[in-house]
Image 1 (cartoon, rainbow, N blue to C red):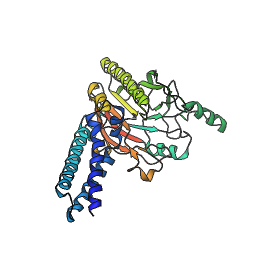
Image 2: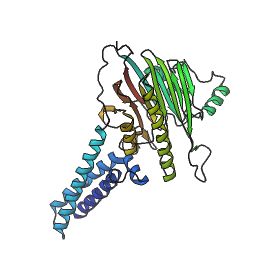
Image 3: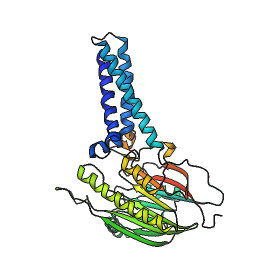
Image 4: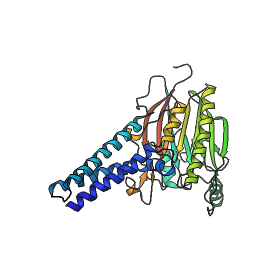
Amino acid sequence: MSFIGWCGCLGALAACALGLANFAAPGFWLADNMSFFLRQFLAAGLLGCLGGALGFFVRHRFALLYRIVWFLAVLSLLGLAGLTGVRTLANTVEPAPLRAGNVPLKVISINLEHLFLGDGILQAFLEREAPDIVVLQETLWGLQERRWQRLGLPVGSAGENGFPPYLTVGELGGLVVYSRFPVRRETSKVVQGDLPPGADVFYNADRELLSLTLETDAGPLHLLAIHPDSPRTQARWQNRRRYLDEADGIVSALKAEKDGPVLAIGDWNSSPWSARFQQFLTDNGLKTAYPGRWPQTTRFFYDYRLHWILGAPVDQFAVSDDIQVLSVSTGPDIGSDHLPLIVELGLTPPDGT
């Protein structure tokens, strides 16, 4: 029992220290990446403190030291929980019923992980949800085209099988948007990234930002599709930072036009507890919300059934103040390593009626 107690106390201290590093040193690659696993660190810290409490039922050779270590573990856990809670609430809005006169809008974002767009499970999901806008990442459009052509099917399926009719493909073919509304303006900007030695052909350090202005039933809507590099190495972390810097500039320019609300959505490869993600929201005056008011796993590893243990919340959205958030949820496992992000919004017509 003494051994369990010591392991619990020291394990809780280690887990909480890793989590607190995200808040203490957000400008460092490794510390910032700890933000992906705050839920796991909190769970490990809690279990460690409970295990440490069991140690009080036996005698310890260094009883005073044991009490001090356990107290520090509990204090660290409380500090991590408090900071995580504060950052969870930062820059968020409370989902609410559709206000009178507002126009509902359903947007679905999916990182496909190269899933074929003709897949039956994906199409059944989209037909059931009937979204107004679908934003896709990791599409590999060139390979999608070849698959459709080989099967003798219409390329893109726009307007069929749950896909809205207006189709826009980014310059690199990674970002794709299907919309029920006509596209008034489109811009695809490639952000150059550093390609590490030994990278395979599927990895592209360059990433695109796809900006569209859609003519919705409530007037123009500025949509920015997001998918920066995954910060698995320091070089790729820097790629993500450059990408988000470019996204800052685009959102700032769109808001300066003052001719429609702004929606940024996609796989940000960023935790909502990342200081850089929160900086993006704060600097651009944007808000977000989470499924069930708490960030949920959207990217899982190995097996969906393990998503609470081996997963992270990386698919996000951000809206300007003139967009109402009605609900946020995640979809089912559709065969990708990401869950769909389903966002229902309310748009205010220009005349406010």
